[in-house]
Image 1 (tube, rainbow, N blue to C red):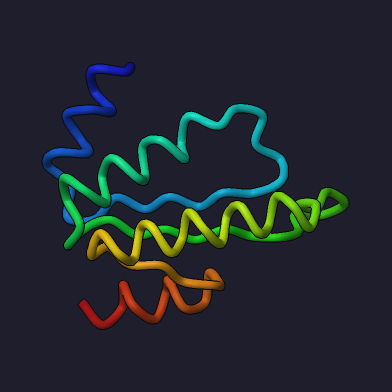
Image 2: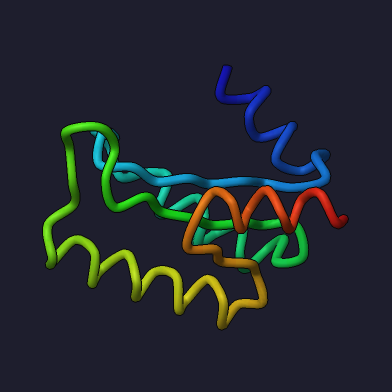
Length: 92
């Protein structure tokens, strides 16, 4: 599966990363930063502060905001809501 994911990240029109408080691992953060460097024109990052009953802490949100700044500085896209992501993709 990992080989297929790497292949798709290279071939897809967009690489969308949506981070939620339900996630257990943190590797997706490394992937979005990597893609924002290698494929900035097709990398999209969004994080959701609350997912059902789970929420990020204030410290986690500050950290994710810094990741968003880094991603944007690399030339990739960051959106604050899924609606913003949808609007962006619908106009591409």
